[in-house]
Image (tube, rainbow, N blue to C red; front, side, top):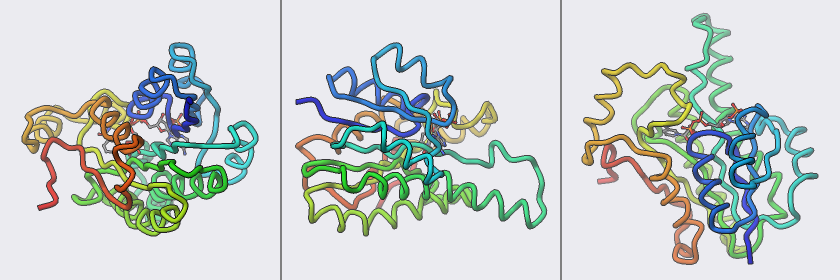
Amino acid sequence: MARNILVTGGGTGIGRAVALHFAAQGEQVVITGRRPGPLEEPARRSGVRALVCDHTDPDALTRLLGELPERIDVLVNNAGGNIMFDADGRTDLAAYARDFRANLDANLVTAALTTKALDERLVEGGAVMHIGSIAADQGAGSYGASKAGLATWNISLAHELGARGITANVVAPGYIADTDFFRDQLADERRAQLIANTATGRPGSPEDIVGAVAFLASPAARHITGQVLHVNGGAHTTR
Ligand SMILES: NC(=O)c1ccc[n+]([C@@H]2O[C@H](COP(=O)([O-])OP(=O)(O)OC[C@H]3O[C@@H](n4cnc5c(N)ncnc54)[C@H](OP(=O)(O)O)[C@@H]3O)[C@@H](O)[C@H]2O)c1
């Protein structure tokens, strides 16, 4: 039977690739994003359902619930990004506070609110995944802090959901090319450095993340929970 799968931020990049993969497997997939525009192409191409939602907004999430199936098998909390790429350059304390909070909102609060909103719909045998980041272990200011917080929060979530037969894990990408993440602000030098940091000598692709997400959502991964699965070509290792 087809599973019901929600991929937040599924209009572009990693989320889009994850959604297209599950749709190609015959699953019932819903994607979300704040802008209707980027949601159109994957919806047209693969038949995924596209719904506009800002996952930082509890009211928007409550409205989203009205559009979603009663049972959710797989939740991929992918929506996020480093809001510093969109920052206005202000450096005063008020701007610092605004930007810091915005990164926590974008990457941690989105996942927590979405999971909370869907709690009663998550079914036994299900899987929750959050897209974290190598930045959680390597820095990157408030963005890295938000992804580190996501991984720590996931530990208690795994215990809460484990009692109901649902897994909860983080997939932590390293540098992934061909997404909108860097907003065209990644200098050639920095890109070369990120690739040089890997053992594989190449950037990651959205498909690399698809592999990890598909595995964690599969029957083969039922005893894996509360973990961070790093997908970074060896740019960060746990030993
Ligand atoms: N690319 C990398 O190198 C890299 C590395 C490590 C981790 N990651 C993580 O991977 C995830 C996906 O990023 P990506 O690389 O695929 O970049 P992306 O192409 O910019 O995708 C991010 C998606 O999230 C959506 N989104 C952002 N905030 C949202 C919100 N509040 N509510 C709903 N949707 C929201 C965006 O759409 P709207 O703007 O229309 O809402 C966009 O479709 C992010 O969590 C990112 O932090 C990426």
